[in-house]
Image 1 (tube, each protein chain N blue to C red):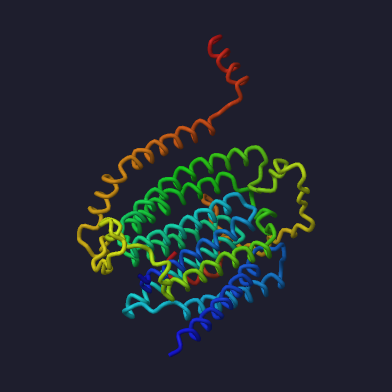
Image 2 (image 1 turned 135 degrees about the vertical axis):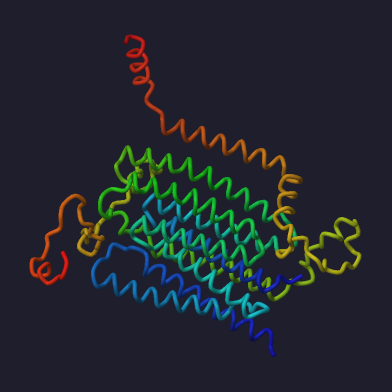
Length: 147
Length: 269
């Protein structure tokens, strides 16, 4: 029985989400972004499971996705605790900060050219500090009818 | 119409789409560049990503109605684009926000696929609970400014190639599915297996048990969950409890020596 078009499209979307998550978990170095990528892979698997469930007319995929949700919640709780502990020890969320745990025959990964901080490229909204009266423009005050 | 020719042209289109997607992800990933070069690379990467997505849309299978097709197109595009943005964004906070949008898209895809309960549960459990937990940890642990390790990647080219290989294999397999299985590999239908006579010609089941528009969809799902899968539900409950206790135990752990000191102080006072 050939799957319907909707099932096939759902499978493609699930595969794309899984591949994107795989790239993220391989390439990124921030521990939290790595976990987000893993969750993205779980989402791709969920979409594929529901697609197959629709194809077979069976509840098994739906039930499995519910368990995926449960296990993802547990995994996130425990993993975030580990991330917090790692941050407390090294002060960084960098996966490479833990490369002393690598195999003894592997070379050390060294950042050759870390980019200079481009802080000027970041523009954060500026909030007026509370409790301090803003400077008033004298001319504008005089122009108003009621102050 | 020549099915063989259309199949091969679809295959080459998909190959181009996968290649474009890999190049786009590679260009968009943080590679330690800055300034005009980075901006140009990002612009070109977005262009390639758009080309790849439009090729995927063009090779996708047409659904029945225009309304259903448009809805599926929009929600799946939201899911995939926001997922890619989650991976390539420099700032982890923005990454988490993009992930929330990707979750919304995935929930939409699940709804279109007929999983109403799962779509709602994804929003509530993931976006409502898990993502907020991620954001809490980010706010607790994020050092000031943007860290240097957020602006470089581990082997961006090899990662993009690995993702492309996986995506290419998956789309190849799914394309073969749509071409129809060979006679040898036709899976035995469930009814035939139950009847114990696999050789008997059985018509395909006309009414699937999962009816997305059934009024008692959630009730049936609950019946399945607490009927056939009751033991698994109990195990999942135990798992949640163990994860809760374990997380608290790890985070509140102090070295044994300090604990002894604390106990001695308390006894002395």
